[in-house]
Length: 249
Image (cartoon, rainbow, N blue to C red):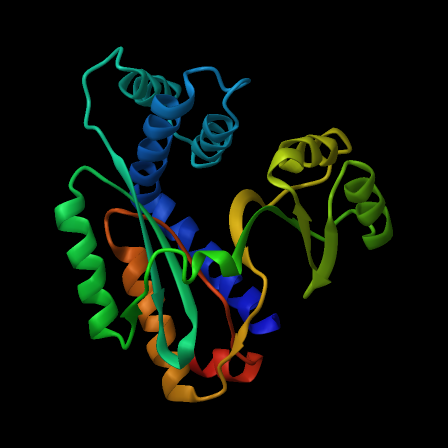
């Protein structure tokens, strides 16, 4: 999945630009509000809220904005009520696509996402036809700077990580959702710089995309879906060869 990993790196750089534009604030505020509504205002008892608050701090969101989002979720302040919309689809080359959205109007969001699919060679899929391909996991990215690969692997596995891989001087640590925070804290306690720590959906199988036009169309679709104002996350199970990804990027 080298090509997929590099695409994730490109997405991460784009996320930094989005943060500078303030786009990430909108997504994080929605996630905090929904997490607080579903699981309560205590981050200690609400892991979803805890992760959203970590993302908010990483984006340098003001504390006041975080607190207001929580209060809107619990009903202590008036606010918009967001609903989760999950769209399952197949993109070009038969790649499975899973889109997670938060919206105040399902009747608007669902047709707009289907329209983006149609424009970029994708097709909607029935509930459950794609989601089974993905597993929820914690993923931590650590640059190999100031720490050896062996030491980092030892720290991660002792803290409860499930997998450890290194590619292009970047370590990727995979955990269960329950142990993500514990592993992240263990690394921080040992002064290891964490580039990102997220709950994500990892594919159990991948689709190799080796046609340039298909790769272009697929990545255009994923970009369009991510740019939609209601989209929180987009997951796909493709593997594009490095040389092909370089041409598309």
